Length: 93
Image (cartoon, rainbow, N blue to C red; front, side, top):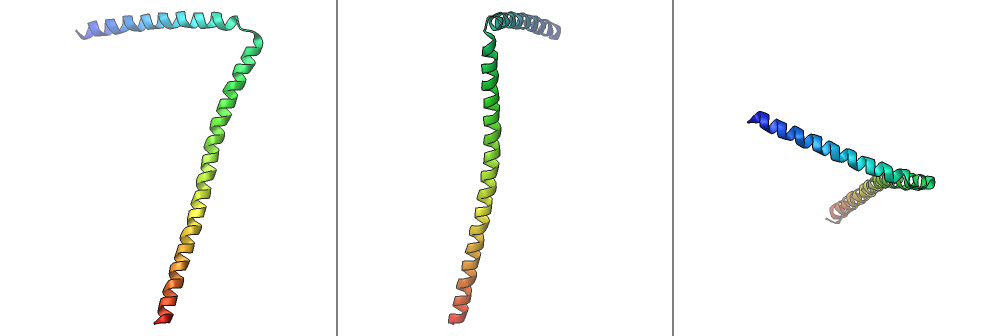
């Protein structure tokens, strides 16, 4: 039983590899018919997408650092205000 399943999986694997090679040969035939400058355009598009992703990640990190610093300033102001009110309450009694 187990051997039959392995044989079926092996046949399916071989069929999928053959279909992939057929797709690959079709893609290579299509790619070889394109003008040379198309490759530069595609490379530029891929590079632009890569840089956009990396700069977006970097920008998010910088924004997060800025948000954390602003949060620390806000908390410090709240603590100072709490201290000021506490002193005003003590001196008012």
